[in-house]
Length: 217
Image 1 (cartoon, rainbow, N blue to C red):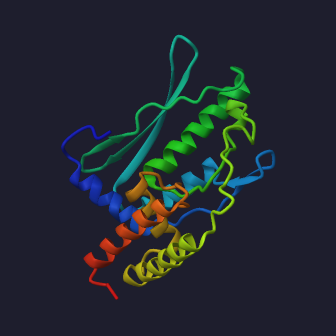
Image 2: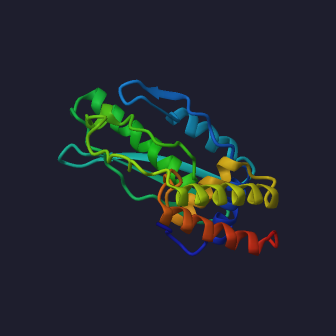
């Protein structure tokens, strides 16, 4: 949450950061969950490169309580004032030993840092080392008729608007644009757009951005 009234410079710097951020490659793999993800080092490198010249800085604090729960908090600051705090995040480890706690802390740091700076890390379930999850537990089966004609039409329209946005904002690549759309519409840079309702919301937002940029075709 925002902590003071000196946010204009911080918000302006974050806008510059988002315009120049280069989304990192999925440099980590989880064979148990058959998924790839961006490691903490990959997220840090992308952020450290993106904040150059913006006046932004960040710190990640680790704390614990009397019950042995470990918390991570990410704080973004600007040299001219303004502080943005993530709030404390705790992911319970499967075992409260050094390995389990370390895995939990690493995952929490990566998750928070990516969320705060809008880094696209795509779907990943690599936190199973921390929470001991089952790769199939809690997963919903995809609808059998997900690729309906209506959805295909919406997908095609969505992709066309992405191309229009790339033309309207040439300094941003497709991954950056899609991350911003997901953040603005669904408050989650890693959200998976898949239902008709999702596509309609995203399309409405993109049309509005194109109107503002005077790039409506």
